[in-house]
Every structure is written in structure tokens, then in C-alpha cells.
Length: 199
Image 1 (cartoon, rainbow, N blue to C red):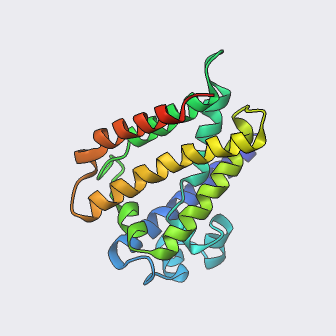
Image 2: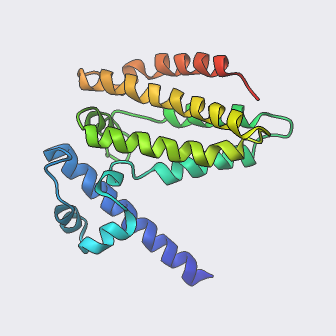
Image 3: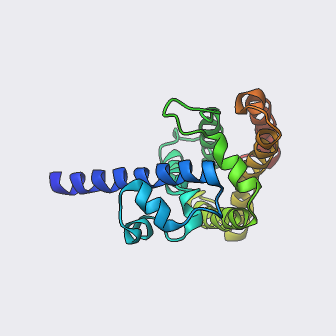
């Protein structure tokens, strides 16, 4: 068991090192100008190791997607008895966005992803693909009997988060700080969630 935990910890550290190295390179040179070989060299790993952790180059930008999906599912599983799965997802999304900073404590700017995606059609397309994957994971976990309605609700939840991202990206690209508009955008997100309602 200790060996398994140790291997998992090593894998997690390698994953984070690759993502951090990529983020620094992308911030300095732009997404399209950076190669996988350059990311591998900066992270001190082999090229194949990068692909062992990230299926495509675009996923280096969205390196937290699996963690975010896991947090949404955990919020549903661990919600108080009698509370709504949809409300749990809404609360988790709001809580995560409250932590977004221009430069967080670990020194990797959260604002970097907004600039990268805003300026890259390739990254935008990948973001929308990942959103669709999140809907596929989220819909059956909501506990809504009708599959089509579950998909509609899950799509709406993910769409609110995408709208948050887009509005924040426009602000950051215009030279603003995340903190300037974060609270206002979250208030708007809450109102959007209210329109969706709780199931």
C-alpha cells in the first residue's frame, strides 16, 4: 500500500512539474510557439513522459480538469442529506472560483490561462471539448431520472462556468486584475444558477 501511495505521489509530482514548466513557457512565448520537446526539457523529463500525462499539447493548459471534475463528483457524493445535487455542483463551482487569483500563493498566475485561451482558437476548441466531457460525467451523477433533462441541466451548469471564464478572460486581456471583477462575476453566476433552479 505504501509503495502504491509513493508511486501515486511521484506521478502527481511529475504531472505538476510538467504542467508548471509548460505554464511558464506558454506565458513567455505563447502556446503555439512552444514545443513538447521544450516542455519536456524544462520539466526534466522525456518527451514520452509528457504524453504519458497529457494526451495532447492543449491539455497542458487545462491540467486541472480531472481534479475539477473529481471535486464536482465529490461535492455531489458528500452533500448533506436532503440537499440537491445541482446545488452542490453550483456551490463547488463558486467555491473554486473564489480561489482564483491574479498571482496565487504558489506563484503560478491564474490569469495566464485566460490570456492563453482568449488568444488561441485551438485552445478554445479544446476547452469546449473538455466541457462536453464534463457534461457527460456530470449528467448521470445528478440523480435526475430523465437522461435528457439531466444532460440539459448539466450543460447549463457547465455553461455558467464557461461564461465566467469568458468574462474573466475579456477583463484580464484588457489589462485588469482577476480580483477587480471576481466578486461581481460570481454574483452574476449565482443569479444564473438561480435561473437554472435546483433539481
